[in-house]
Image (cartoon, rainbow, N blue to C red; front, side, top):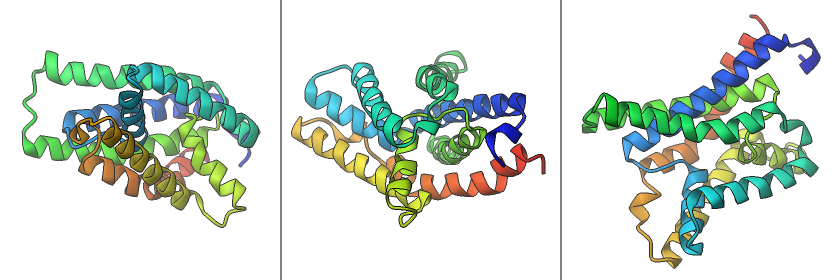
Length: 217
């Protein structure tokens, strides 16, 4: 089904819902204290090495990737791209503030494991939703699409996503070691789960949940 055949209101709702899910994902990973997602891992490692604030470096990295996306996957840029870049961080901050400051939830080991599971599931579900909405996706989420396109499908999306996630995790770890930073702050079992499972989960939720929803099935 092409974009013109998809109801605009439904696409908007799916885009916003997907970004909400991504915010829940990032907040859950942070609450779990089992490591951050792959892209954040890289940006924390590099920003520490450059003695630059995380937010400033992430903005620079997003802008750089957006330039590549403009030339190789321009169809990935849209309203959702901007909404994602602005809102995900604030949503994650709100979730952490709600649980840690307002509700004062004690994150016991079972709750941390639950937060890790929720983060992993919502990571795939969120990206699948706003990809299918076709209203633009975050610059980094376009990388796997670019790899798939440049290899003419020889590296399918789910494998390309695993490849890009593992690569940025390695980059983050290398820069963290070069700056003598604390690896525990950027990488953990949550990072590994995100890097290895996100691609397959996005593909699964895209095929079995997001596309049937947008198609009205």
